[in-house]
Length: 523
Image (tube, rainbow, N blue to C red; front, side, top):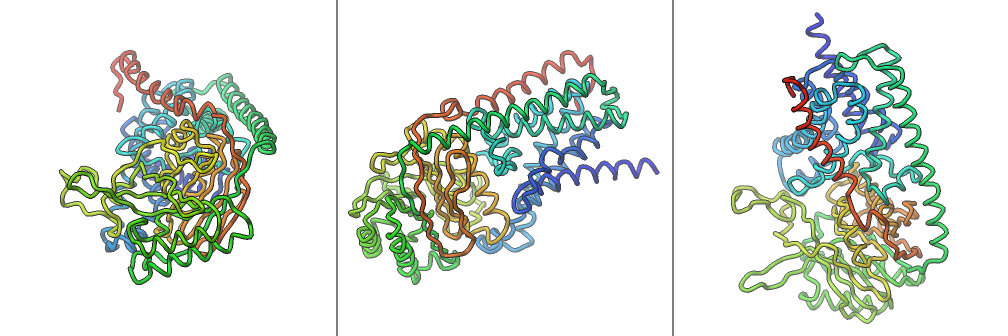
């Protein structure tokens, strides 16, 4: 009976961890669950081999990513025109890949972290290092890393201006490890055959409390400092325009003129607020700006009527030799209608905006049929809008911290994210996407403007306060005066040194473990 019951019990615990972790993120947003979500998984790992740990970690990760990313099925069905029988397996394939990270996390804990002290020290370093690896391997997919769950806990996330979002993930895993050791000690349970001593338990809890306390103190000091600096800083009055254009008709030539006119009309309604800069979303103009003369003239006429600068999303192209090259772009246009610069998207969506290894995978078609094969722009490029430089992030570029930091290093005093989240419907995806934007403001101590075709649009101040945000699938225009900071944070200057160090420690520790493990199997 035990041979049947205990494996099922462990599988149940691993699955519960995956579901609890998903619940810590939007839409549910029970962020207090973040440090506790791992406890059932860790409980299931306390007396298993590395191989069994890998399986349990994989189960945890699979359930987590299936429930976190379930909105992809809607996107692939509605806009990729894929049947449900193909969309669901593709979601499983992506979730299975992402589940490998918690799988290796669990396997390494069960082997290289057999001693309780080693477990406690390794736990946050290992998780953080693997998160960094996930953010960069195979073009990277750092969607909702653990630290993002605390996007509303501003005093706890200010350390991101030193350590990035990875520092918040490290803190949460340290808290989780201390709770787990306390649980083992109070229940007189063992970790991998070793007893948890009272001294270690006390030290772990004290360490976690001290880390949390110091993080909160730093956050309190930094938010107060930002508030003080904001009062003295120059401000730029920005309007974000949310046109709420139906994605199903957006690229239909019959609707190009009405869609463009709608954005112009909404922009004119903001004139009374006297914005200096109006921001339209990604591909807000569903034509090649500057090439389609009639519609481009319509846009320029509307801009001259407002008397403000515009930043608009539009596809673009250029000729390189005999080849036509396409870009997903943003145009900065002066109040008199003249062009002031163009930014081209840097980090493209695999199988959405380009096909990776297309030469070797000719049979693979793009998931989103309306999108072309785009080329990448230049990382860190900024646009000069009067006295200030804008750091641009198009669509899911906002989830890659290094892109925002690169723009700030190149002089950006304001971060602007233009996106089209209509693909996601009313699922949790737009809320998840918006939550990650908070960290880009905090890491770089910059105000952030977000304009989304169907929402969520909004303004975030340099400390991460969400000043305004819109509802999904509503026409909206919001305006706010935003402080412009010039000073760079440690994170802006040095990037992910902390996360890289965590990964480096893990990569060094594993060979050392092999050398001194006296023949014990790693798996």
